[in-house]
Structures are given as C-alpha cells and as structure tokens.
Length: 483
Image 1 (cartoon, rainbow, N blue to C red):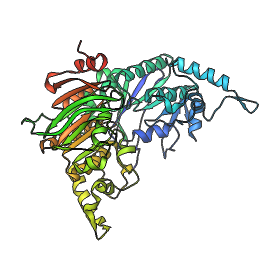
Image 2: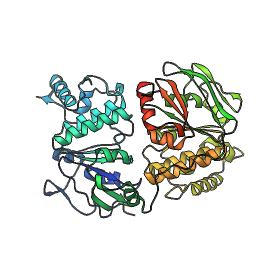
Image 3: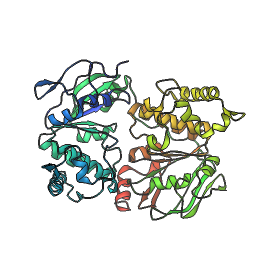
C-alpha cells in the first residue's frame, strides 16, 4: 500500500492552508516529503514557480521550507540561542560569536512577541508553549517562506492557543505561508483560509474555503461516511454507589485539599488549564505521584499513597496524557502492550503462553475495531486513535473498577474520537467509574455526567454537565468565578 498516492496541494504566500485527514491518511508522510525527510517516488514539487528536487532537510531549509513537528526536536540541555542556531551557528574565523547569536535570537523572539524568553535560558526549563516559540524562532532563523506546523496546539491551553494564533497572523501578514495540521475543527475555523483533505494517501478535496465549507462536509470527506460529531447520550440510570472517593488530597504545592467521589457507571470530567493540577490529581489517585496528605479509597479500601501496584490491584487504570512515552512500549507488539498488566494470567509453569496472549488480544482488538488488524505488529505502526484503543484494551482486560483518562482524544481524528466516546460510555454503563481530563471544554461537558472545574490545584466548582456551559467553565478556569 502506498503511503501517498496522487496528492495535490498548492499553498499561497500569506495564507494559512489547513491539512485535514484521519490518522493514517498520509499527512505526516506528506509534510516529511515537503521537509525532504522522505524522497517521493513520483510527481513534482514546484517552489516559487520552478520545479525543485529537495535532496535533504537542509536543502529544504535553504529554500525556505521549515517544519515544526508535534514532538519538538529541541535539545533540552542547550540554551535557547544554541537551539535556534543549531547546525548553522554564528561564527567568524572559526570562533563562535555568542554575543551576536544572543542578540539575533532576542530579535527573533521579539518578532514572535515573546521578548520575555531569555536567549541564555535552558530550553528544558521552559514551558511547552515557550519551547514551541523557540522552535518557531529556529525556523525563522532560516528566512522561512513556508512554515509547516504539525498539531501545534496539542500541548497548549486555550490562552496559549490564542497567542499561537496571534503569532501565526503576524507571520502571514509578512507573507509567510503556513501549512497547519490539526484535528480540532474549531481551530481550523478560527485560523484557516483554505483546506486540503487527505484520505488513504490521496487528495479528496483541495483549496476548500474555510468559511464556505460546513463541518459535516469535512467529516464526510475525511471518513468517507457521514458522522455526526456528537457525544453519546448520557446514562439513563443514576450512578451506583461510590467506587472512588478522594478526600482532602494534596500533592506538594500542586494540588490542595481536593475532594470528590465517582459512582459506579458515572463519568466525571475535570476541566482546567494546563498546569492547573488536573493531571496531577489523576497521577496521585493512580499512585504515580505521591500525595502529601489526604486519602484515596476504592470500593471502601484505602490505597497507600505513591503505590501504583496497589492501585492496579484495586482496579484502577490510567490512560496517561503522553501515551507514546508513558502508556505504550512502541516497539513491542500490540498484544504485548495489551497483556502487560496481567501477564501472570498467561503464565504456565513460569513461562508465558504467547498464544493465549495473542488470542485474548485479538478478541479485544476486534471488539474495539483496532486498525490495521494483526496483534503481532508494533504499536508504533498504528495511528494515534488506534494506539489509544490499545491502551483502553489493556484496562478492559484488567476489568477496571476505576478508569482515569488523561486527554483521551489528543491527536485523534474526528472519526476515531466518536468511537472512543462511545467506548468510554459503554465502559461506564458496565459499572466502571470514569474520570476524564481534557483541554477541550466541549469534550469535558459533552462526555461527562458531572463536571469539576480545577484552578490552581483546587476544585472551584462542581455541577452536572447539563447545568454548565463552555463560557461558564472558561470564566471559572480563568477567574475562579462565573462572570
């Protein structure tokens, strides 16, 4: 199967051209061709009216094509300036000109509206949002004419996304062309000018005006079928007895006196900005982060703080925010990732029964419609949505009583999102207590039965999902109160 097959894309100076498609549609391969990481087997690339052959990423940079990938390729122990000019250092007579480099770096950061970032700061000490600005400064250090942004908002909160859009508008006003990849259709509406849609490695539509193309049409083009971008209906029955009880939980200076409970069959959503403490709450419940005070109880049994094994034995499962680095062994097979939490179940006389592992994993992947099929393949080869299904399959096998989901649809296309929403609701309907953290307020409200708003490590508001809206949540996370 071809990764790309007849892709057409035309980008104009000064526009934001949005590239859409499900995971596996060919978006990543296409931008790697434009960045000269991959060589195309056929077709042509025309740059400023002339056909070009880009032999290497450096060749692409020299003509003015820069790419910022979703997983930033910065060096954390180097300074901001050293990262910006890595590979094309400022020097004279064989000697580095640090003062000149720092001055130029400061000018680039000012151009991006972030003069507060110190050129001499270590990149590893910066926030994800500021690291992204450093990546953009590095791109602009090459006199960039086309900037490709791959899921740039994935690790940003709402305020940081607005700042990113301000930077993008500033660049397009200078004539820089932007290719913008995102699964968040509301972002496309706000920042995009035109859209190209890929499916199965081919262009199915290109040059669509953002303002004139309805969301239903985009979803149909991406998936090949009509999907209503709606959440599953809420539970018909009230939640059962409390499964998870968190009482006065504190974690250093990150979380303070947090108390809540989740009943059997209930989905509780935690809404808050990045850094508000929402992820730390999940990690403390799971035992991955040691609570400094307070208690966590599952089915009436108190869990010792900082003990993941105790939480797992009690039936607590966690699908972490960074599934690739924290939730999966990317080079291991699908079946190994699914069975890793219950390997003893497949042991016979001290040896693993790989056949039994594969059989059970196959049953689960078929039930969850993991594609492509085949539990022997490495998890790395799956799309983001299918990787998330593998993480969920692991905890299905474990028969969880409590399932903690941190950003369950980050980097997941709209079709797979709908499937994950349905799966989470089915799990809740089976009696699992579910806690969801998401940066998307619409997702928290739409998927949850009850919403807890987290600000500066504390729960500042609690309400049934039917009695709170996005504007109210925004007021609460920004100001601590409803305007």
